[in-house]
Amino acid sequence: MAVTKVVMPKLSDAMESGKIIKWLKKEGDRIQGGDILAEVETDKADVEMEAFGAGVLRKILVPAGETAAIGALIGVIAEPGDDIAALVASAPAPVPAPAGAVSATAPAPRPAAATPSAPPTPVARPAAVVGAPAAVPAGLGQGFQSGRVKASPLAKKIAAQTGVDLRLIQGSGPGGRIIRRDVEAAGSGVTSAIAMPAAAAGAEFEDVPLTQIRAAIARRMPLSKAPVPHFYVTSEVAMDHAWELREQLNTLEGQPKISVNDLVIRACALALLKHPGVNASLQGDAIRVFHRAHIGIAVALEDGLITPVLRDCHAKPLAQIAVEARDLVERARNRKLRAQELSGATFSISNLGMFDVTEFSAIINPPEGAILAVGSVRRVPVVDESGLGVGRRMMLTISCDHRVMDGAMGARFLQDVKRLLEEPLRLLV
Image (cartoon, rainbow, N blue to C red; front, side, top):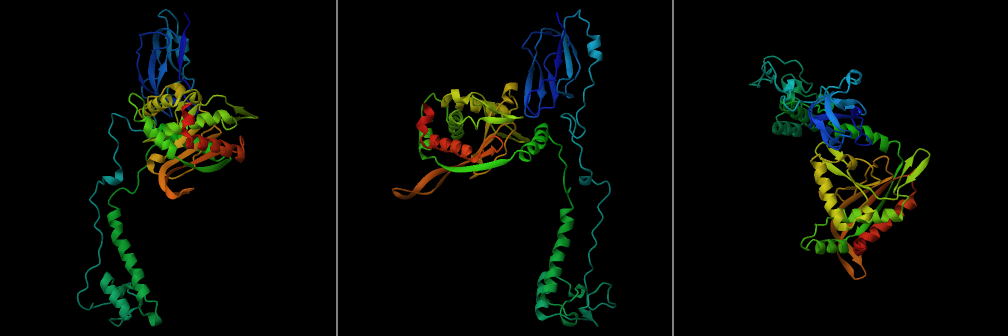
């Protein structure tokens, strides 16, 4: 039987390396095709790695906790009699975990600034003035001459209220006389001087190492915002009928709960079929137009943002979209996504409505050609044929790659999304 190389797979478009979280099989275990060999941490999620050959797991070359580049040999599956010595010898050494990362079992090092080895040096404070001084201290301002302070009555009053020593102030009035603005300027300096020791009691800042997700975002965002010429189209959607339909659907027993985002996904999927130019991306000297709507759903995690993919949304009814989208988001938050859910989106949706955001503009996720930003559904005053009333409104902003499409194309797409949401029964057929 042939020897099977176990290599670090490319599990997402932006993935450059992967970290072995743990091996689920050990050396000597019998392996069948499709068995889960290990859990791999990527730039987006923790993914189960499948075996593509059968035999015995003869050698693990990258142990748990270490990193390997895409395509690097991390293990060997072969029969007991097969010679794998040359293959193992040719494998590169694994990359150790970054020094900035803190081990899960080791305590995090404490900042040196927070634990000084010597007792803090006491802060020098000016001695209280009792009576007239025998000698004029160094550094006194021109307002103190011959034992008398030259200051306006208002300046003296303010100094008494704020605790400012007039003898230490340089007057800016006629003949060095201390006036109001001199005292106020000195008062702000005293406040700052008093506040500084208190602020210095703790560490001033902390450098937090980048997580894999945040590092991937840092690499990819300049590749989108800088070279991709974005343009934006915004529209306000009347959500009264959609909100009413959603409430009615959610009262049905045995049916999945429908969210506003589910309605938006369904509307976008139908509109993408009608406007394939929006469901497109730039590929070198050509524009690739997709005929299936694979929609990325932006999910916020504690350490970054990922966009898992809900495939074939155009062919799924609203209820199925609701079930699959909820499952996808939950697994994304638990870092349990499958490899095929990490890439392949043709269009993305980012919804910040749950944070009471009225509207925003999202950054396109390359190589996609557009992304839709969804705001909250708000109750606002509206004027219609019957007069002034209260209605539900939601702002949508589409960010488009101007190399792939023009403004009119993006506007027509958004116009159809708006129409589908304002006439939501169309989403059910």
